[in-house]
Length: 598
Ligand code: GTP
Ligand code: SPV
Ligand code: MN
Image (tube, rainbow, N blue to C red):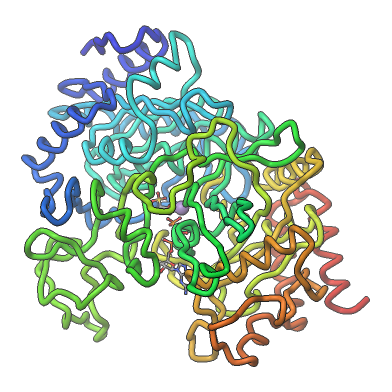
């Protein structure tokens, strides 16, 4: 099947396409040009086959519904590999396979898997087309669902091919649904070949190859080589009452609040004070050191692939406004009348509907243990354009990015970590990021609630040896004359009964205000063994009515508990043997000394 097109003369691209088509044997090849006409035609095709369901166009214009297979509802980290010649280059935190074995094993599954199907060719740019930050990829896929998601998530089509020219570099991304069998599913990254092969899945991060696979795993490897950072971070702008806008980048693990923080709506008192929030991105940040010695960043994506459950007018009104039109809903509950619902949505649960697996559902249903059966999968998602978000930043398209004043790390921890604290230095900040931990959520397969170390929220996304990644972070700090300050936050501290102590969501701006004030040297803090913690008076808690003992608990540093944490960090560091930068061992020693008062 010749890959005929007048869209490009890039011989390497055409040659690779021929080779992949010979492997997968699609009936036809269709190039994605980025036009609305083509998108509408693909949508109509997917409605006809049942791959997508058209939602109520009067109430939800441009919105569609999709269900993934029952065994295909979250990223499968256990089937995700970094394929490097040397095992050590993937490091102790990644699954590893040799490139030969990877191509052979996935090749067997890809072989002939697109017979009777169409292969779509999606040229895309991560970052504004032509910016110094940007990288080009081409994804081949047999899924219309993937194409429609990509059209929202990244810049796609002819303009990208024009920029690529006849010999530009691009990441080769091959995706095939195959049988969507867990035993025949592999998500493979070949950083040495700038190539991604994903087979056997139809879900989100496994198949939108621009996202975790390219913008994080492949890009982190490139960033290491080229001297920049590719991170699992949101970017938001905080407009100060004076009119000054400062930008923050924050890394939280999956399903720990990036989308929510990125779209934060200030509580009433702070709006009155004059604060405003600008959303730049909710999941990925690419950052470079500019000629001014500061860190500048872009969001390489143009869409949100956000968690639906828990999203409502109270928790995230901007997200609700964003998903009113032109949105793809995946694995939520389908209501009669072709609208959608999920646990934690506004209003009463519908009396009946059809659940994320297509089964009849009503609110009183319980499982064999008497637990309510959810109508939406806990990792159900919406895909929507950033441009529809009421708080979207006017600087999203800026080719030189935006300056980052503070970097924030955070996890989901019922105990231990206070609401917010500041690292003593860049090196200490890297230690804080490298030793981050969080409770497992529905975004990964595995035991929910279990605490795992997730350095910089990159555990599943770092495309090379994590010890080298830590060293790269340390070196980035040395290269900057005006590095961002580094902080840690925890919105999830709970009491004995497991109730959250902090109201979270919009109120998180109170912690951000303290962070930015600290960056300007304008807020008080206490120097504790773990870093600078706010004095209760330095946080503006007006109108929250938090009892003083709760505030105290939120800011408490328990030396005894932290010493145990230090032991667990030491255990974690052992994984990396001699490759671990000594600076991090020094930081652990310093932490222990501060905790024991020596
Ligand atoms: P990924 O898209 O998987 O990378 O996740 P994310 O980090 O963008 O997480 P998201 O903002 O979608 O939040 C996930 C869950 O955390 C949702 O159920 C939210 O309701 C909840 N959440 C977000 N922010 C807060 C908060 O400040 N406090 C509390 N208690 N829950 C929050
Ligand atoms: C995450 O899991 O961090 C996500 C969703 O953002 S996915 O794109 O599926 O990886
Ligand atoms: Mn994410």
